[in-house]
Length: 347
Image (tube, rainbow, N blue to C red; front, side, top):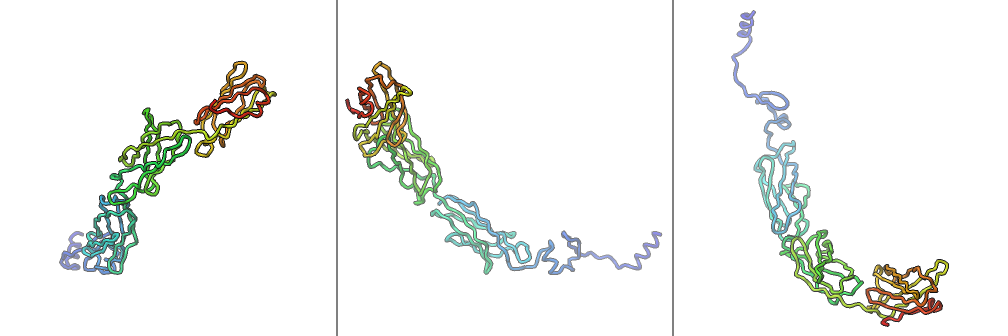
């Protein structure tokens, strides 16, 4: 049987010759049978075709002015979806500058300096009539070199009022403003070593903080801190607060509950407005029998109102009313006086 097969092979075949074959994901075939159509969709090196698609990649998306280098690259495909041929030149339009790079392994790339001006910039990559989609990148201020400076107050701060602390524009060495949203600190250090901390955010290139001047009659030294840089200290003075006039104090008997109601106000400052809501107040009443009752609280709309557990007939009563503006005192001699009494400030 084996002899027969050998004889048949000798008579039915030609001498074997070596031929080049190509293998890819679709099978094995002779190189001489490779046609353009097959080469376009197989793993065989394709025929040279024009670029048809440019995919741009730009990074990082945020660069520091005058420092970081950017990287722009393009992955280029031909009409059949294959990577474009090496050596083809592409133009990179980056902001206001232009660079050219050639393809290598389907990719063209350039590095670029972001420039000294902060803002958002566009990148476009082209080859003849073929253009990429638009890409963008940002350039931000070099905040590491921004040195804050506090704006001096034009007048002394007033107790129990709000004062606005503000810095100059936060600019880098190129004149770029610090981006909005960055956190910072304003610290007011007092003579006893304590401090008041404010944590504003950058808005429109500067820092602003509204501060309630309370319990700091000596003011302090103000300093701004931003991105590791600190300003010089700025002296903040606080003007002594004074009453514009004596505060009206009225009282009403409440015999059904054996108490009295006292209302003090309005508390007017020398600056022409009522002492702000939330300002602390203390009212002490000493009765004729020697009892002393104290109530503390806060002003509302310039008034302090309280009910005290004192017999309405326990006269005379000495009423002492204290706020940040000082102490006022009035003596209540009778029930009739109880219903219509004004203070004797300074007595």
